[in-house]
Amino acid sequence: QVQLVESGGGLVQAGGDLRLSCAASGLTFSRYAMAWFRQAPGKEREFVAAISTSYLRTTYADSVKGRFTISRDNAKNTVYLQMNSLKPEDTAVYYCAATNIVVVTTTPGRYDYWGQGTQVTVSS
Image (cartoon, rainbow, N blue to C red; front, side, top):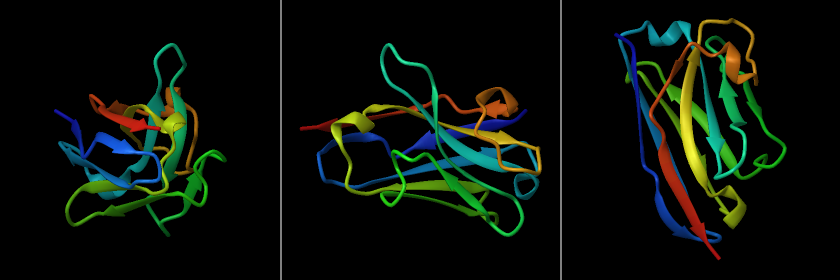
């Protein structure tokens, strides 16, 4: 079956960096657009970044533009989220997700598969 396994979360001070990884199995990874979402306590899940299958088109939430970078390595079936200049408001559980929709989408409901999440905590 399809599995998405996130790693790389942790506790970091404001201004610090973290890199999240999401290893996929059970699907033809190169055919799936990939995304990162996050959910803070008491808030709805929100879109962070996405990367397409072809041409590696990327899309970012306004709140992370210029600080976060999404990338993928199809040879390793892995998607990454490099997070720089972290802020306390970035604190959340971060989830990776996969969709076979060709056009990059920011809508959670259009993603077929989800990981279990990894906690990111940014202290002030």
